[in-house]
Each structure stands twice: as C-alpha cells, then as structure tokens.
Image (cartoon, rainbow, N blue to C red; front, side, top):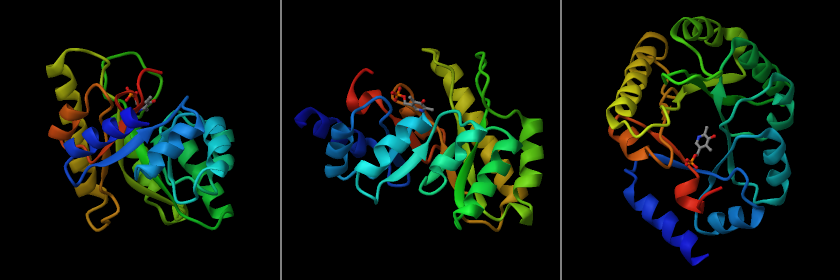
Length: 221
Ligand SMILES: *Cc1c(COP(=O)(O)O)cnc(C)c1O
C-alpha cells in the first residue's frame, strides 16, 4: 500500500495538468484497483473484455473504464453499457458495432482510432488509407452513437530513443492533420493516447494528452 501510494504520487507529480493518467490494471486483483481508487485514481485501463466485466461490478461506479487492447466485434455488447473510452478502434466494422451497441444502450460511446505507428510486426492499428475510410464513415450522421475523440498509438518496444520519438512525433502530426481536416468544430476531438511505463516522458514531450501506465505504478506483471 505504501509503495503503491509512492508510485502514484511520483507519477502524478511528473504529469503536466493537461495529461490524463490511465492506470493500466490488467492482471491486477481488484484489491489493488480499490487501493489505487482510494488514492484518487479514477481512470483504469484493461486490455481484455472478460477481465473488465468481472472487475467493473465489484468496484466503485464512478470509475472510468478504458478498453485499451484489441476488441473483438462480438464482445462489444458486454462493455457497451458502461465503458468510458475505447482506445483500440482498428476497423470500420468494429466502429459500426460499437455504434449499434451504444444505440441499444441509449448512449454515446467515446472512441479513439488506433494507428499503426511502429516498424514492428503488429496485427493491430489502422494505416493512413484505412484511417481515411473510417473517418469518412465515422463522422457520418448514421454513426451518431459513437464520438471519435482522438487517436491512440503504441511505439516500438525499443531502447532507440530517436526511433520512439519519431514514431510519437509522427502520430502527433497525424492527429493535428485529422483535427484540422475532420474535427475543426468538434472540441471533443482532443485526446492523443500515447505513452506507457517505458516511454511516457518521450510521449508527453511529443504531445501526448493521455498516458497508459501499468508496470511503473504496480510493478512487473
Ligand atoms: C499493458 C499495456 C499498457 C501498459 O504497459 P506498461 O508497460 O505496463 O505501462 C499500455 N497500453 C496498452 C495497450 C497495454 O496493453
């Protein structure tokens, strides 16, 4: 408990006021989440639907749940009633299903589009052509139950600071371009989710407004 308090305080002290901390709680038992909550944290990130829906009912109802991992279309319905922000929208099909489930729940679900920014092999994230397609459809009136609030990206898992910085800077550039071209009049498009335990300082220097931190708060998984 004491150690957790210290880690939370240390990280919060390092974050500029415009940066939101999402505490990544995947694999952590609910008593750890409760302690982080008692310390004042409200934004929790999980990468698996099953784990999120097990934890959500037994913890305080004002927690903001962030889905940060790959989301399968057939699982959207389980989180649609309560999820605060989905960071990992990586296909039009998925956005469409989120819209359908949000409508069923009579709410609007906030989403980030996950962009493929690394040179590493990865199955997830949109490239620029796919991004264009999803932006055209996602800003259509038929998609009134999803709100695209920004972009998310994961840099290479690498010690090469120049490479990681370049990937973050590229995502920030893309964010600015998308904002100008599609969301000039939508203040909700304001979130750039980038930065994890190993690279959040760099991410913030390059324009991040939301960091997703697990290990640096709670220790190795
Ligand atoms: C696990 C995870 C994180 C947090 O990683 P840490 O290195 O533990 O801070 C951030 N984002 C995503 C998408 C993750 O899956």
